[in-house]
Length: 134
Image (cartoon, rainbow, N blue to C red; front, side, top):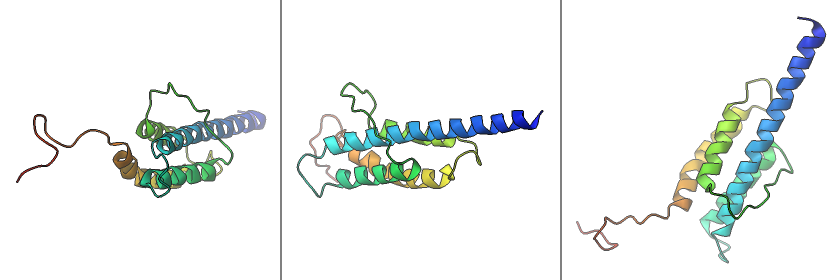
């Protein structure tokens, strides 16, 4: 393989890593926007802080990437977070400007909070009231 061919292959791998990172950031911003939409006027709602953390991580990965709001988006915040993790996990080590595994760990740490913020299912058993009896 010629030196030019190796160089072109390396450039292509870097381009793919940058594009994949940008797509992951779009998912993170979409998840943050959906969390913000559920908050209402409460400035201290936990979902608002979670959305801010997702945007902060997105900005650390690729500053300036924002999702175009899509009201018909069938995916929820958790699905967007999972998609971002899948995309970042597909980046081969050494091809990104920064190590994606470090950012992925932060996102994995936020996953339980996203699950809690998006959990809308009732916790009661069917046919019973909302309070459990011992």
